[in-house]
Each structure stands twice: as structure tokens, then as C-alpha cells.
Length: 84
Image 1 (cartoon, one colour):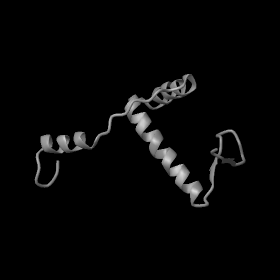
Image 2: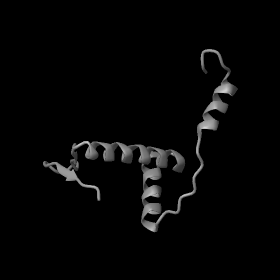
Image 3: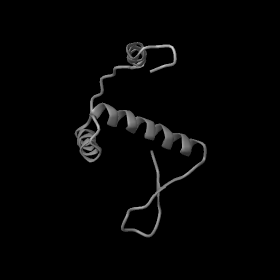
Image 4: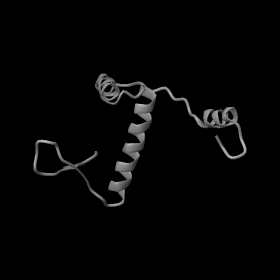
């Protein structure tokens, strides 16, 4: 709850900032969404929101000259991610 508001006012403020979009997912993307939801237990909406935030971060890192690496649990080496 905000300093001077009620819980209902806070909920209304959040709802007013939401943007509804319609997305057509490819079968591959739909499977990836289902997998992410299954792994995290989050809703599809929360999963898509998080995915967009991660994507924007990764794009920003690369556009600013940074590099992104991952390491599988069973590997000793880092692998550089590249986005096209």
C-alpha cells in the first residue's frame, strides 16, 4: 500500500499501467512457453513478462559491446551466446 493511498487505489494504479497485447506464437515458441511455465510454476503472463525483460537486458548488453556467456552444469567451458 502506498503512503497516502488505500490497497484498492494501489491495485487500480497497477491495473491502469498494464498493456494488453495479442501474440501469435509459433509451435516452437508455444512449446517453449509451456516448458518455462512448467519449470517455474509461474503463469504464462508472468513468464512472458520475465522473458521480455531478460531479452531486453541481453540485447542491451550486446548493443553496448558486452558479451553474454552461459555454462551448462556438466561443462567446464563457457559458451558465448549470439543473437541474430
